[in-house]
Image (cartoon, rainbow over all chains, first blue to last red; front, side, top):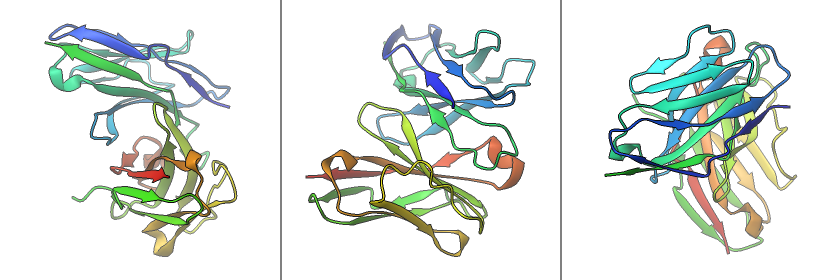
Amino acid sequence: AQKITQTQPGMFVQEKEAVTLDCTYDTSDQSYGLFWYKQPSSGEMIFLIYQGSYDEQNATEGRYSLNFQKARKSANLVISASQLGDSAMYFCAMRGPPGAGSYQLTFGKGTKLSVIP
Amino acid sequence: GAGVSQSPSNKVTEKGKDVELRCDPISGHTALYWYRQSLGQGLEFLIYFQGNSAPDKSGLPSDRFSAERTGGSVSTLTIQRTQQEDSAVYLCASSPGGLAGAYEQYFGPGTRLTVT
């Protein structure tokens, strides 16, 4: 079974500063994928970034980067130069091995990020 | 192009009534997922459809929940004899089939269900 743990229910960050949102995971699969999604107050789930378990380099997408530490089973999201529009819930999620059929995602409980002007 | 759409956006129903929630996936996406998000929680997987294969129903919480997907496109999630604990946001996601589906899931805006 897969499990995602996000230990920070809420975080505050000053505008233009960087912030790290924590995510640890547990799985017995050797091959897996890790995702981060953003959910603004409007409710839609917005894909941010993806990291495959065999990817040697940390994923980056614009101001988002994923700090992947496989041995520690952590996949922290780093947001650089925070903006007011970054205020939202952030969810870490995992899927199982490619070829396993269903790529259902297992989600953490989320971290609410508030950016302070 | 058009994203995943869901209807209705909000549904208020009385305890014991049946409800139907609809999902229109992105055109061409063969995989479709239903998730449930209770207040203050992460998303919980409910059911998965892939093409014409038998659905993966392993996440359905009780036999009051069922879903179908007609013609490999639109899906309907049905909750019978609704209970207050069914109150949640129901999210639908679609993805391309095959290996590409391992990397992308596009979510709809969700249906907020309130059972009174």
